[in-house]
Image 1 (cartoon, rainbow, N blue to C red):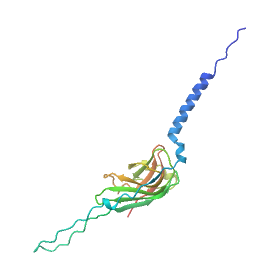
Image 2: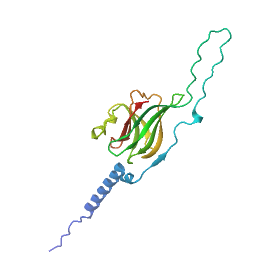
Image 3: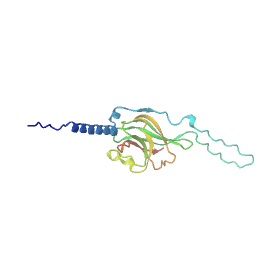
Image 4: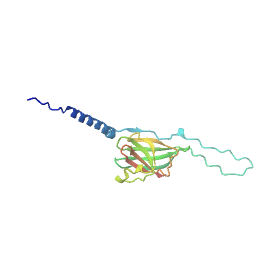
Length: 195
């Protein structure tokens, strides 16, 4: 009686192991679970200093014999706060505040102060036209309408500055979200209230 050789299971096990390895790599790339344990702290200075302000304009005295006119108001020489808000939590516990400053030359900067949220993959700072809604209903509304991506979140803890493009209409963009672009969810958001 001839001995029959049993087929080897080794190729099947190797194929399963390779599939599991690829799946693990994809899951690690998508979720980046190590970020839950690693905080990125940022402490940027306030966006404007005395060096960035412009001098007030001066007016020449009226010529003799000309009618008296009120002198024009001096030009603004310091940045001013034009909006502010406080973060509420969405998918992750989030606290801190946000302020928008406008410089005398018209440039604007969004400043996040004392932020504390979770770290995560592909976090962005978005200016949006979406309402800030508490609870689960507010987690995914920020990509439904208009938004301006101000760039990657620099750190999940601390204070940081983001330049606002000149064409961003702040009469329509009235909220800020720490947005996870990978999973399309807000970690936290703040309504911008005019000052």
